[in-house]
Length: 563
Image (cartoon, rainbow, N blue to C red; front, side, top):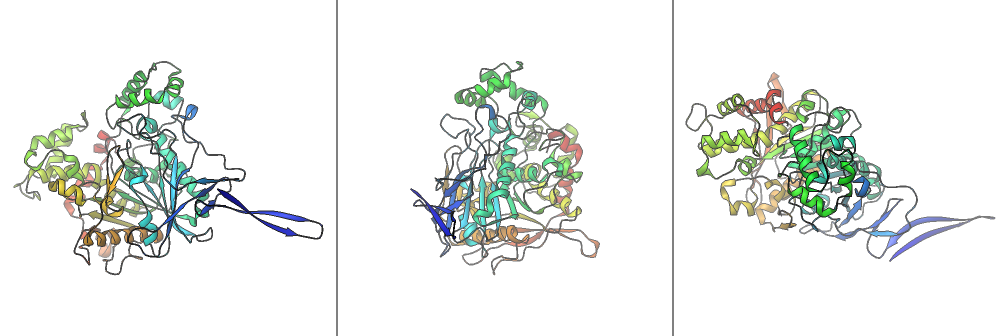
């Protein structure tokens, strides 16, 4: 049930009736003018006297159905006045996933979620953090990444937002037919539309649209980089700061792979790829036909692609960064020390030189690197026992290489370039505390991929197409969780992770120190300690690490995979 509150003003010959506000028995209401939403107030576990109100499933664009399928998101009609309150106490549906299943996920999924301090008002002007989930651009949803703790813990107050965006075939179908009658990289355009909605409306929740930070991990981290380089930096950027975690850049599909994926998907959906009206057919295909089409194309085939001039991704991100064609925003970038452990493949006893070669040469079943590149790469990672080798086993060698190629070097590379462009607030980190649940199952993985998420989001373990589970923290895990959230939210509020850090936490120094003309690069190494203090500390990035990253981010090597 909802109510209208009215104010009546009387004059000698005139009575003016002023519409004051909408209220609801469901919960606190935020009125955006064109729509009003009722939220759900709760107190995060372990946080005292800091109630947070959650608003979920708020549409930020028109449903991408019918003629809007495979097109850029279209803005809602935001004219007129709301006459009723919409129940926004729960999540919106996840977007369609991969592997795709009818009934799991929805095409009508362009919604976002907002967390606010319950006492925040439209005049509060609080900093805003927007989280973009990962999942390889083919699975995942915001539900595994609650921002209650971030909002409740930050001492000055903060607004949290998370965005649902189209994935897989629905978000990243490519090829000439889509380019001619649709929009490439629709999933990235969804993210952008969500950020633009934040610019228009977050003030009503108590947020400051001039103080927005975007954050994400893995494919979410790659999304952060792509939003930083969007349009080659030629358009106004709807955020001020960026946090990129374990930036997951797999090989960018080339034209041949994109066209093959489109032809396969169209054929399975019952459409003729060569027909000039093939996109009409694809837009009229049943949800079940598209589910079948998505499942007939190899995993990872539908992901962001280079569009050329005018597109949201006009060139490979690394090349845009090299040429300075990106937005100069404050930045935190980092990775888990075991990211490569997750993706090297096999177990320690199975790693041999040939395994490393095959992993480089046949990434995702396709040929990427030349023999000359592989020879140079192996020389940069000397075998155990060789002069200058820092690896005690072939497994360590393989995991270091896998981590650098996909995750480690992009955060280093972007940090370097931001500093060279004059950005002052640039920070790096490495995460060395394993996800306890995953570690107990496979200790050899160490601080494996997604370990940071475990601590930042209430012990989350993301499960494929099956929601998420959350593990209660023990004392030492809770200490690191509180420390990390304080760093992350301090950066979002101030551009400095140390300004609102916990009293016992070490100071997080900037990425580069050019004292005495020497470029010393440092990052925070976050790690568990005991029940009262973490083992986090600053570390210097080694010369060997920098040399390896210079190699992987060089134009010749980048051109072979597309990063």
